[in-house]
Structures are given as structure tokens and as C-alpha cells.
Image 1 (cartoon, rainbow, N blue to C red):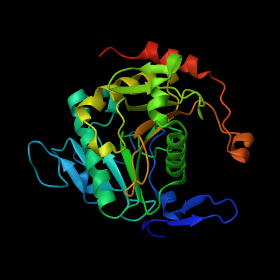
Image 2 (image 1 turned 180 degrees about the vertical axis):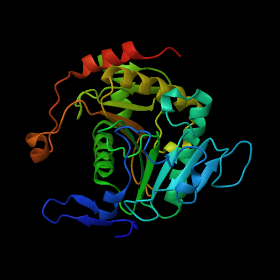
Image 3 (image 1 turned 120 degrees about the vertical axis):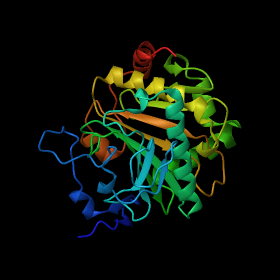
Length: 307
């Protein structure tokens, strides 16, 4: 069994898509914690030979590829979901450096790398690029060194496609953007105001679900100013993690696909995993949440670090 990537398949009964990638079952895991006998972390500085050859990196002081001296490093996933379309973005050489621990200028560099890799994949023929982060044991993270992953798909993923359809429908009915209005009308669900805002959706899919988006309408994350997005992202991530007290967290970036033919507004979605999906949710695709969005927003506002 080789880690060459999986197959994208469609269930003809439900229409749902699946990637079947058995080789990913062989990927190493240390997210439950490392001990003295654990192998060295492939994402730490000095262990570059343990990953596939890098495809991109930030080395302000120069240096050769696949060696130390980097601040951000991008490598192909060694156990890809889709061959050539699955990358790992290691946002810091330190083993415990979370995104919210970075200074705003350093985090802006990371966001710039996100933009660069999304552009590379979309320009390389992908239909869409989805950047994700898995934080903590139980989130899906197999290695504990903080990192993000970029999945470039030959089709627009169904969830993003649903958002594109709803954005078009909302504009046709109201003449405005559904995300712009969601932020503007958040009220008691507003967590962060400013050029980049954050709010808890009224119809949350997860307890404490949070969205972050620019206040000014913008479809493509590649055009965002990282220096503006970075402080908002840092503060929101810190607030969410403080409030959920170590629970697993997933987040993902939805940006315009390669062939955008209607309205869209890029955004980051944060999904705390404080409860377990049960039969009703799995059998109906209807979310069942127990925390009022207004209560979640109040907790996040109280936990926001000062600028």
C-alpha cells in the first residue's frame, strides 16, 4: 500500500463525496503526547530530512531548502488524501508554537504563506483549495507540532458549493451579501468588531461555532491584507481556546474557488468539538446544539485578549 493519494468517489444514492485513502491509516501519530521513546518530530527545526522535500518556505536570513533557518515551511503531506494536492504548512519551527502565540507580524507572514499556497494550487489547476487546522487530541491531528493543511480538490467541495448557492440565492432575494449581513446584524452574537469581525452564527452547527470575516465585502482570501487579518485571528483563537478549556478545535478557510461565477465572501469557520455527533445528527444532517449562540458570544467577548 503506497501513500500516493486516495480516490475521490461519489455515493450515487446520497450524492455525497468521499475520498478513499487507505494509506493514510499508516501515518504516524503523537497527538496524545510524546514520551522519551517517541521518534523525533518531523516538523521541528533540524529534522527537515524526515519530511518530503519542501515546496515553499520563508527563510529571512537565507539558507538552503530542507535545512534549518526557516520561519514557515511547507511540505507535501507524506500520506496525502489526494496526490500532489495535499500540503502541510508548519507555521513555526518551535514544537509548541500555536498560531495565537505568534506576534502579529509573524502571524501575518504565516497568512501570507497561506495565500501563496492557495494561489499555487488554484493556478495549478485545482477547482478549490480548503485550508484547515486541527487543534488538540480528538480533532484529527496526528502530530502535535502545530500546523495547518491545505487540500486542493478537483471539484468544489459540497459545503463550499452550498455556500455559493446560498450566497447567490440571498443576493437575488435581498440584493446584499449573506455574510456581510450576518456580521452587520449579529447583535448580541458579535464577538469582535473592526475591519475583520467575528460572530457566532444564529444557526450554529457546533456549540460555540464562530465565524471570522472581513467587514468589507471580499470574495478571495488571496487579496486580503495579512497585517489586518492577523491581530483579529490571534485574538479570536485565544478567546475560543480559553473558553473551550482544552476541547478539540477544528477550523477551516472558505475562499473563492478558481472559477467564481457569483457572489461570495471569504471567511474562517471555527468548530469547537465540545459534544459528540449522535445518531440524529448523523442520520438527518441536522445540527443539534445545546449552547445558545448569545451565551457563547458573551464567553468569547470576555475571553478576548487586549490588543
